[in-house]
Amino acid sequence: MASGQYLVPASLFLLCLVSTAVSHSIIQLVSGDRKIRIDDDLYCDSWRFSVETNDAGYWSTVPARCERFVQDYMTGERYLSDSEIVAEDSLAFAKSVEIAGDGRDVWVFDIDETLVSNLAYYEAHGFGSEAFEETTFNSWVDLAEAPALAPSLSLYKELQQLGFKIFLLTGRDEKHRNVTEKNLIYAGFTNWERLILRRPSDEGKPAIVYKSEKRSELEDEGYRIHGSSGDQWSDLLGFAVATRSFKLPNPMYYIS
Image (cartoon, rainbow, N blue to C red; front, side):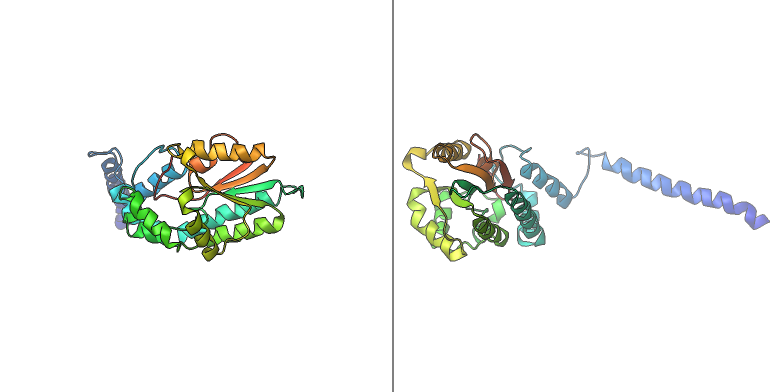
C-alpha cells in the first residue's frame, strides 16, 4: 500500500514537468525578434502559397532564404504533381464544353513555364533569386531547346482531339517568332491555330493589358475563348478573359 500511495502523486509530478516543458516551447515560439519562429522550409512554403494565390502582389526576386526551397520544389516531385493536377482540372472542364464544330471554340496558352520549361536557364541563375536579365534570357531563348512540360503537352494534344483551336499568346517579341516556333516543334507542340507575339506597338504595355487586348481581338473575330492556361496571373486576368482560367505553378518569377 505504501508504494501505491505514492504512485498517483509521482504521475502527477511527471505530467506537470511535461506540461511545463510544452508551455515553455510554446512561449519560445512567440518570443524573440519575430512573433513566430519558423524554419525556412515552412516560411518558404507559406511564401510560395502567397505568390501562387497572388496575395503577394508584385515581387521581384525569390527571397534569398528560399532559393534552396524553390530549387527543391522545381526539381522535385511536387512541381510535376501540381502541374499534373492543373492539367487534369483543365481537361475535366474542357470535356464539359459543347464544341460547336465551327472552328471558333478556343483554348489560349501562354508559352514559357506553361508549355515549355526554362528551368535549365533559371537553374544557372539562382532559381529566381537573381534579378532578371533580358539579354542572357534571350540568348537562352535563341537556343530553342526548352523542353515541354509533360502535363501541358498531354493537355494540349487532348484539347486538339476534343476539337479546340489552340492559340498561343506569349510575351516574347515578334523577333523571336522563328526560334519560338522551332522550340515548340522540338518540344512536341504542333498544329496551333495562331502564335501571337509582341509587336513593336505592344512594347511597354504591361502583360495583363497586352494579353487582354489580344484576347479581345480574338473575340472580335468571333472566337469563343473557353479556356486559358498560364503560369502568371497576368496571363489570365484583365478583360476578355476565358470562361475558365487555369494557373500553373511558378515561384521563380512574377510578371505584371
